Amino acid sequence: MRKSVLLGLATAAIFSSSVQADTLEDVKKAGVLKCGVSTGLGGFSAADDKGNWKGLDVDVCRAVAAAVLGDASKVKYNPLTAKERFTALQSGEIDMLSRNTTWTLTRDASLGLNFAGVNYYDGQGFMVTKALGVDSALKLDGAAVCIQAGTTTELNLADYFKANNMKYKAITFDTSDQTIKGFESGRCDMLTSDQSQLYSLRIKLAKPDSAIVLPEVISKEPLGPVVRQGDDKWFNIVKWSLNAMINAEEMGVTSKNVDEMKTSKDPAIGRLMGGQGEKLGLDDSWSYNIIKQVGNYGESFERNVGTGSPLKISRGLNALWSKGGIMYAPPIR
Image (cartoon, rainbow, N blue to C red; front, side, top):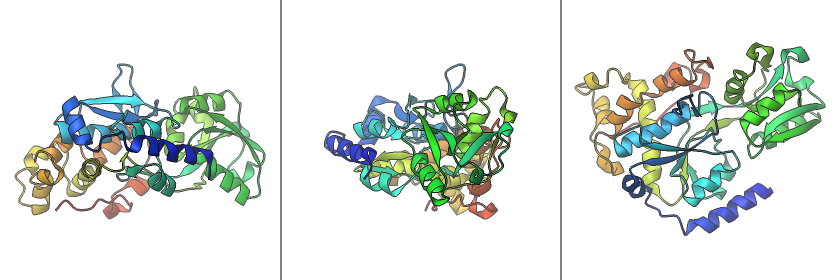
């Protein structure tokens, strides 16, 4: 068993008895949601020049705040490195984590945490400079690799190179900003991470067109929000806040037409718009507040990472199941 897993198990055991299992009441009492995010990943969670946090992961935090507090702006964002994120959640420093975090068996079963869903289906890839003249990861034998510590990419990288009988030299950094600076300075031949992160990091280069993302995808990386185990009420709230956004897109309910849709005769839309709050311990306007203030999943995707954003990522797997993707939410009924 890896040292990091043992540390996580020990940490979970230490905090399991000290963290209250009534996060909903704690958030209501505080009047603000403490949400763990990245230290700055464009499109997912990053602060603009005015200090306003934006991104696909940030919108999950905002959705939960809208559902619980009626105001999507009532969020305190805690920037965390990959190594810090789980301890911060286990200790109660944050109420939830929404930080491009991969759902795995080890994390789900060994750290005292629960994944509340998937808000982005991703996969690990590789970025190289065009000057390297490489068009496939299989041509990277002996390469120096920039990689972020405390992530699933480390083990995936080792497995991929071993399976293809190749060697590499890992150059490890604590933050994604450090990895892209190491890559740009020439300390490594390639940078590996989730493909979404590679696109986000590429636009930080002085010359973004000087780098390419190779075609290989070597892993499954379902990314989503995380909560502590032992608080099913809070787990349900975070889970269904995300599900409400996905279901709203499928039903055609947007931030712009949500008021008009309140009078819809479609029973499914009626359930989405209200009447289910008591099952979650929330006001019946919980889902309306999410859609009105944050938008549906498609709106969030498009403005943060989609073709209308600097990242220009196509929906791909993250398209709705009815439109060729695998994004799917259980029904609200």
